Length: 234
Length: 196
Image (cartoon, rainbow over all chains, first blue to last red):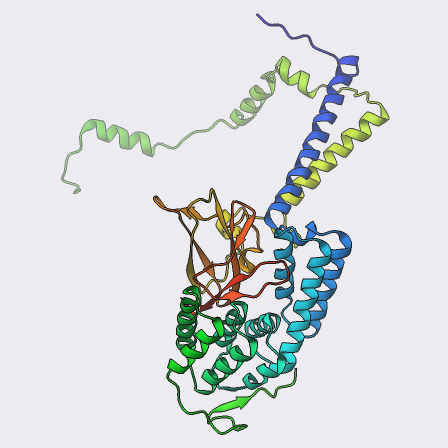
């Protein structure tokens, strides 16, 4: 049979018990704080925190500048996060984010107040090599018509090696002819097939544009019926 | 019942007894109370006496301070766990409800052919370009990798990462230009209920 020796309070034994209790309390406290910190990091990871302090500050300043100008700062954040995943150095990341901000500003100036995704598509197009003047045509648009598909295909064509001028004239012609998203998508499918078969990208585009049915373009400088210009202030 | 009916003698006796006035003793109450007072109180057991007996704790100031800090810490943790900042009691929610649900307009399936890859991930602006967030699943046979992702309407830029290091654009989607990191991405346009 086990026997327990009673230790009177105030004796050395009771002091040991108190110290153990304090140690246990401190351990519980520390473990709880650590767990809560880990949980917070798990639920809201800020991947920008992987950047060094100076780079992170610069990125945040650029994002603030974008927001002040009414530009989508999420596009800048996305570029920075992409750079982090690719383990790019800080200088490259900051340069890429600066370039994106500059492209967004140019796109906004050129197109006027458009949807954020149209703005990012236009910024990507400028980054691919299109000139701001080539985008001015798209400032005038039909009510409810989006240039998102046209810009996406245009940027793809330049990225695949089609000369910027050729891509610009082809896409602008189709746009003027009232081409819809399906037409642009069909053009892209055909051109990329031709390029994969070994055709010259510029020639492949020219041939496919000629095949694409369209309506006669309207008089130069006159927006077609039902079209409007983005004249709202930025 | 009528008067002409004859009752059983036992029933008549019960009725008589019930109608007889009750005679009470005026001293009965006092006698009961006195009997209760005389009854001895139940004695506490040894365990109860030991618990309630007064004692003196002797702790050094340092030990006392640590003990107090520990108790305060436990209280703070309990408060932080049980209450939100605005004072509302925190109710444990299912994990699905606790996470902000993505605003998705459509479900998009991404497919990539990489027969020699050991693992393939999808990265893009929809998952913060995090390689660990969206691993793709290999088909039962062949080198086809696929994953289904809820996406909001708009323009999404993405790429595939093969074996954790090799980035590749989607050959079945339009390219997005190199953002300055040395490779092209792909673009997915998502409309309401449909995708490119």
